[in-house]
Length: 155
Image (cartoon, rainbow, N blue to C red; front, side):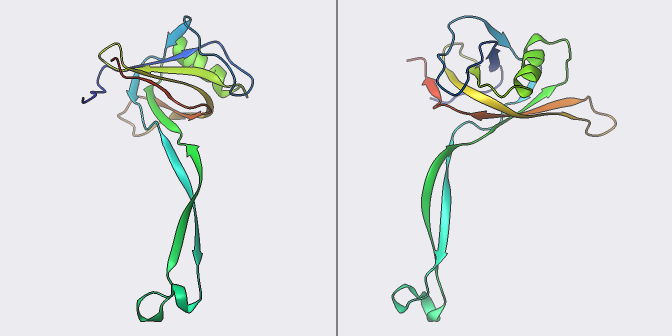
């Protein structure tokens, strides 16, 4: 199944949790308006590399070979771009989350209205983007998931 993103809706709830041990709310979600780009949502591995200087690990022609191993699995930050609307209730709540040290619940509902992703996250950055003179002001938010992503694929 292919998932279109045009028409996806991003929500935040005013139900912060200290730490990542909260329960996602059933109600009280506020849509974050004017979303233009939703970024990435997933995991990535940290990597450690080493150069081994023994004959056993020498590469072709006697050069050292760099070997890498996965170290720790971590969440990737989700970078969201929005049209700046100071009167939008979702953006106001996003600013509140950016100024807080608490984890906030987020939910992304895909255009079919059933498939979704939900998680608690930290808003680690929220900045105004002025861009070029003939453009509208944007907001850019970085949301770092602090819990595993709950996937609902509508089936």
